Image (cartoon, rainbow, N blue to C red; front, side, top):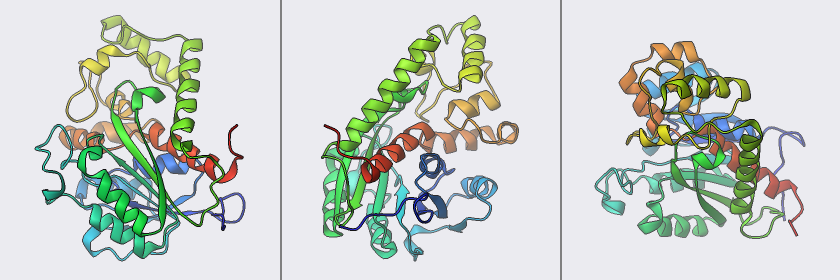
Length: 301
């Protein structure tokens, strides 16, 4: 069985991103050490400008239906979720925004060995079957797991399904179920760190706001029990507390470490939409860590 070379072994893996949004999925995979983003595909003008700022040298495409992808090791993306989202009409496969067939076409054309997909849990009702059927036809095996961003320290729930498909020729060194086991182990580590450093539970109180932000700045983590924030979570997938604006709202979307001052000047409506459609970086990073473990670690006993 062949083995996909990891960055420190021979070369950096090439990441291709579909439906990139503001790039947080590939950012998480990069932080996990899986490789570097080689190209992105995003049709929205506002999001494309964000991508150009943070990945200035990366090749970008606009229309997935016209994309002829370069050779790629890993393809990641969250195709539009509206066909299965509880916030929409749930038209499923009949929805014109059902773009998985284009995703599958690009995977086949790119000769990728690993595929990472993020979507709403509603995908399991009807969309998962054709996704798995197409991946099987392309010679992939797959693992998938639903978990919440709050499991990894985010101040909001954001339950999502994550699917990792890998070429049958890859030397996967873990028993089936490795994705779920790794995510659950990483979530337990986050919970232990939060407990050790003290949980913030009064995030919706006036005093709690300042304490929460100071705690985030000090630890680099977010509150795992921020019920006040969860109650304010809107259909966009994130919450704003009254009096929390600018860089604070931006960071609550999971982009700590990006350009906060510039973010504060962006159009609020477009910023909300971009963040609402984005993944949480910690979730993407955790999935990336799980993939690295599967490629390099001995099976857990």
